[in-house]
Length: 449
Ligand code: BGC
Image (cartoon, rainbow, N blue to C red):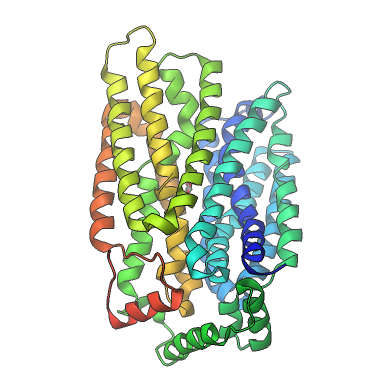
C-alpha cells in the first residue's frame, strides 16, 4: 500500500490516541455514580478523582515535547500506549480510592502525551493538500471516544460496573500499540536525525511517487537554517508570536467552555426540568452531534481554510451561549424552555465540533518550526490541559454563585474575544507546506488571510 491510502491508514492508526483521550474524558461522569458505592467520596474527593487525570495530562503533555524530539514521535506514542493500558487496568483493580487516583494520574500522563504527539505525527507525515483533513481525524477520534464512553456508561449503568467502564480503555490502548508498531516514523523527524534512507522510503511510500528529492531538499534547507540559530529557540524572538498564537488558541479552546457541556451536560439538562433518563439520552444525542459535525470540519478544513472556519464556528458558538443563557431566564413554559436550552447546547456543540475542536489540533503542529515543534506543541497542549482543569474546577462553583445565565453569557463573551484574537493574530496555513509556513515565520511575514 502506498500514496494517499497509505497516509489515510497511518493517520487513522495514530488517531486511536484520540479515541483514548475522548474515552477517558467521557467515561468518568458515568463511572463516578457507582464508584461511590465502593468508596465513600466527599465532594472534594470527587473533584480529585475527576481532575487527577488532568493533572497527569499536564505533566504528560509537558514532558512529551522534548522527549518526542529526542526519541521520535512514533516511539513515544508506543510508550504512551503501554502507560495508558497500565493506567486503565490499574484503575479497574484499585483496592482503595488513593490507588484509583494514582492510576488516573498515570493514565493522564499518556492522554497528555498523546494530545501533543499524535497531531504532530499526523501533520508531519501528511502531504500538504491533505494535512488539515488528516489531522482532523484526531479530533474525530476524540469525539468518537467521548460517544463510545457515553454509550458504555449507558450500557453498564444497570450492572453498576464502574471497574469495567474504566478498565475497557485498555483495549484501544493495545490496538494503538499494535498499529503504531507497524507504521513508520515521520520523514521530517528522520531527516532531522540524519536517517536519510529511511526518510526517503517513508516519503516515497506516503507520496506515492519515486521522486521525492525536492521535498527532501526543502526539509533539509529549513533544517540547515535552524541549526545555525540558537538552541534555546523556544524563546527566540522570531518564534514568540507563534507561541502566543499556539498557547492562546489552546487555552481559548477551553475557556470558551466546551467541557462545561461535555462534563456537565446531563446536569445542565436535568436542571431545566427534563428528568434524569431523558437527560442521559439527550447527552448521547450531544455525543452524536459532536461526531457528525467533526465530519463537516474534515470536509471543509482544506477547502475553506482554518481561519474562516474558526470565525464561522465561533459565531455559532456565541449564538448558542446566548440561547442557553436565555433558556434559564425565561419562565418555565411547560417544557418548552428545556428544548430551547437543548437547542442552544446543540448549536454550540455543532459549531465547536466543526471548527475550534479540530482546528486547534490541526494548527498547533503547523505553526511551529521543526526544531522546536515537539516542545512548542507540548507547551501549548499543556496550556490546553491547564485551562481544561481550571474550567472543570470553576464551572460548578460559578454556577452556584452566579447562576446559569451570567455564566453562559460570559462564555459567549469569551467566544467574541476569541474571534478578535483569531482575526488579528492567527495565520492561515491551508495549502502551504510546513516548510513554507516556517520560511514566512523566519522572515517575519504572517499570512493572515
Ligand atoms: C478538546 C477537549 C474536548 C473535546 C470535545 C477537544 O478538542 O480539547 O477538551 O473535550 O474536543 O469534543
